[in-house]
Image (tube, rainbow, N blue to C red; front, side):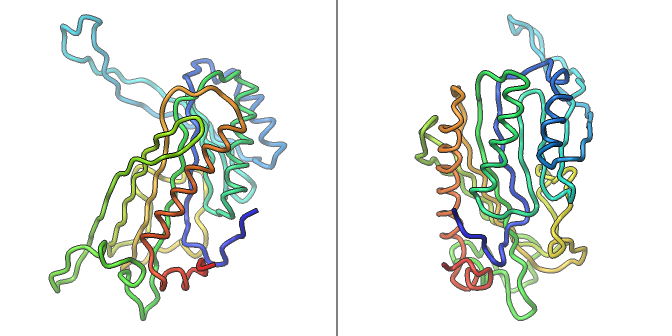
Amino acid sequence: MTQKIPNPPLYYVVGQIKFAPILAMDEYVKQIQNLLRQKGFIHFETHEASQLTFSTSQKNETPPEPKVIRATTWLFSDAQRASGYILTNSSIVFHTTEYETHDEFIAALLLGFGIAKEAANISGLERIGIRYLNAIWPNSNEAVDDYLPSNIHGFNFGNDRKYALSEAVFETNVQPLIQQGVLRLRVLQMQSIFGYPPDLIPIGLNPQNKFNIDASRPHGLIDIDHFVEGEMIINIDNIKSQLISLHKEIHEIFESVTTAHAKMSWNTSK
């Protein structure tokens, strides 16, 4: 069992398992909700949103035609709204603003997937991924650069810098279901109100108190997204091993993009 970090920079973590679409998922939601409620996820919400899609003819002779469809998302959250599940017709997500350890996180993701799998008879996987958001929130006598190695400090011309971004995408060697993963690293430095990337909002969850900040000041974000895609046969032990393999690479790259000062500040240097 991994140890909990005393002062973690993590403020939002998402794990996703994507499967072949089940258009009748709404027929199984009642059973899924009841089972998750018994596990402590007592809050339930249904969200509907419009999505714009484009369809083409089989002969591809005409331009794509736009079409608006209604997409339903089901949310299941715990009593504190610190952790929960997001279910769609083709995926289940476990997300949390109160991350403890990767062992507990992976176990929770597999719990929700197992319940959905049995209820809806999920038969094949298409994507497995984990995404970590780490906040760099320096003290008054520190700078964001104190937490990052010099090769990702970005441009500095002596003027007040409002925004900087370093980004890279890597192919990784992982296992066992899919051997080639994709890892995307984004390191942002900005002077603004603390928040979340526009594509990753914690719907239905509350932020940790220490990250519930509405003041504008210099801070940073380490955003690490690691996933595999492809047809995968469902085996819970193999899915767990795949998630552990994804996490291992995330941990290694996090270590490489943070300084000794950062690790001491977060008490991660163990």
